[in-house]
Image (cartoon, rainbow, N blue to C red):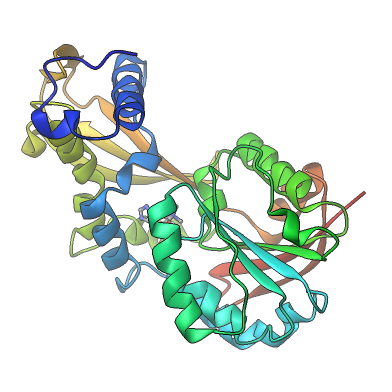
Length: 325
Ligand code: AVJ
């Protein structure tokens, strides 16, 4: 595709395919009814820094709760991974959660972080090598939502997958099942999958976690508009949109929206998009499960339940699954 000449100089210095995709996704999303933007675009440098702040907010229970489960249940989780297994992490992010698990997995034969960002992958691998010098690390630069090949050096080894953080919640159930089935095709029959899944709970607790008093989540959501302005020559007035987080009980998901306070027309790379007052851009779904509803989803995707662990308040869950033949 060709890049619109009205893009900012900053935008045109970005790698063309990536930037071109962002532009077409934004044009498509703002042109749709209802308007949407993909949550995957939250994580530029500013968005990633804001997400790090979210993970330590008093209202945002998922990160600290999952870490506690991995700490306390590490030995039980480890018991489901065969000796000599290679551990494949889908979307490796920071290594904080992995480190908690690694302490309990002395018999691991390799760690295989998978991430779209090759640069980030290699940085993280270097840091990890310093702390776990005996663990072979075999990074794979790939988009985990698409099929990809594991390094041939792993052939014949038992495989396990790790997908923490309730990232699975960003996918609608049908997509989530496709993703889990894809992991199964990559890991193969008999593989173990350790996956972190946020649980359904009181609306007040859920909504506070996505609309915190310090307004960090609001800033995280609004940063998407800032990013559009900066990278795609947008003219969106950030003050004319407000952050909204609601629990959609029927769909069992937290939805994040950016709601236009006024009737207005905004422009992105020369294209105009009209908003009525109160019209929203749906920016994220964060699906919530019960232990049973997640097991049912996993079963549809070819995984049987081995075990599941929660914290004492039942806020978050970690599942161990086995790939069926
Ligand atoms: C990274 C997708 C797990 O859904 O809780 C946090 C993202 N959005 N606050 C989540 C997020 C707003 C987060 N995930």
